[in-house]
Amino acid sequence: MASTKDYLDYILDLLKGIKGITYKKMMGEYILYKDGMIFGGIYDNRFLLKKNDLLSKEGMKEETPYPGAKQMLLVNSEDTDEIERLIYLCIL
Image 1 (cartoon, rainbow, N blue to C red):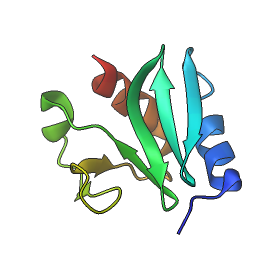
Image 2: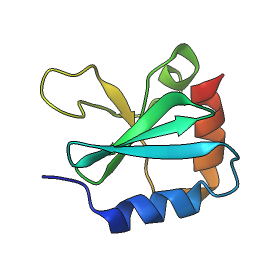
Image 3: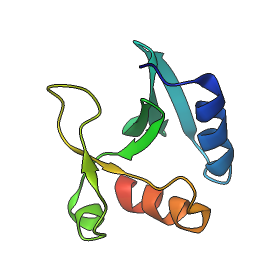
Image 4: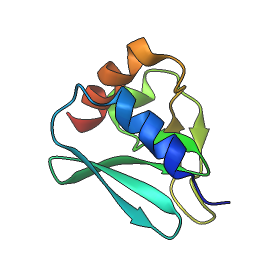
């Protein structure tokens, strides 16, 4: 199932306080960038971040964005207070 533009817009609205966020639509999903570097994406209307040592310590649920892909970390998009902090942990 492809992600919806409405969900992308919702996530982008949550990220509006972070400068340098862009996206690219790819095969029905959306890859998210911070200053030109991939930090995550939207897959099947799930907001996922690339794993790193700092985020792995956060105890977030791991999910596969699509078959054969590396595990990523699922962001609870309803926890809006945490999202900006998680993005910065992701891009450090």
